[in-house]
Length: 450
Image 1 (cartoon, rainbow, N blue to C red):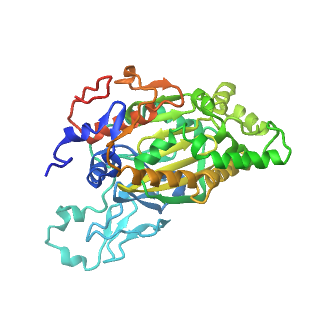
Image 2: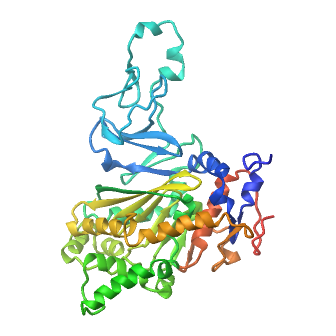
Image 3: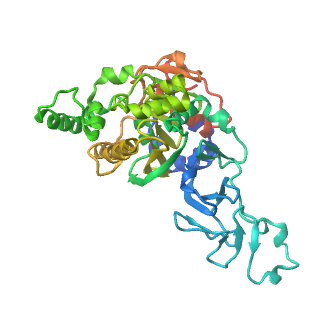
């Protein structure tokens, strides 16, 4: 039986320059390969340093199917280890977060490890004298994920030992994190308000594409925006009158195709993108004069203006993270299976900024990303509908033709209009490079892979 694992050229052929094959969303075999080839070799968002503020604090999660934990060291560094006892393989911690004190103790046989992963003690130690334990992996302690980078307190890891370095992988898209962090006059964010989690019964790529899809709000969210507009108008309010926070955040979803097209976008190598490089639905929040003055004092006139005038819709750090600079909110994409994805929505408090900014982040996440929100249920219904619909016969392909231009092929950074499906095509081209290593593809303008 022919399998994708044995034929990288067959994997590469699933991505043409203006469409992709439905197997990318449906195949269990491809999902297993993604864990090995894409997720292990790209840089994944693991967590935020503020989640482990004190020595001995840990934050545990799964990345690419592997259990890992962020651990705050005695010297204040954040390091990442596999959450696995070197003895029998039991997870050292089963809670999502906590404090280990000065060492980790395995709940199975009580082997202990220092915070830096070094072996500390074990019961019946004399029983290991004269054995090979000290020479093998089990005697070396915890395995560290050595390719870990903490960028402005955002923790990223690459599970593969060899691969592209952090700066080369993300390049200029890192400016989106800078914009977010520098909205704090003190240059510091902390996670706040817990997390909103939802499991969506669709492939992770559907959700990630939708983050860059500016054409769907007018139809998908029409009922939500029309209801909000009707409530506002029923109160006899002028369209330009100051609005409550929820109205301020939901009404722009119905802004129209031209608005979303003119907001502009930029794609980068390796699947990354920034949507809303000119303006976005977040650009017209109520002004905060005292905060803006504090920003100018902290960053200078030019830098403060640059930060405050840019409120991108979404910045995608492919394949696991989406960042909103204003409000300070992120979404994390955690693939679970070919047809199941965990989505996490986190809010941040900007140090030195007014509390209303944190409330904006919390309100936006609840309004838009909670599975019980008036917005998210529209998306979730359609994601699951698409996942089922792709099983239909007669058309094996998903269209990504809108605004395709042969000149985009082979370019790393491209600035374009906000409704261009280049943002999705860019993700799939990165997918193909990771998933079909060693293949050399020539994509012609008709979209045929040769």
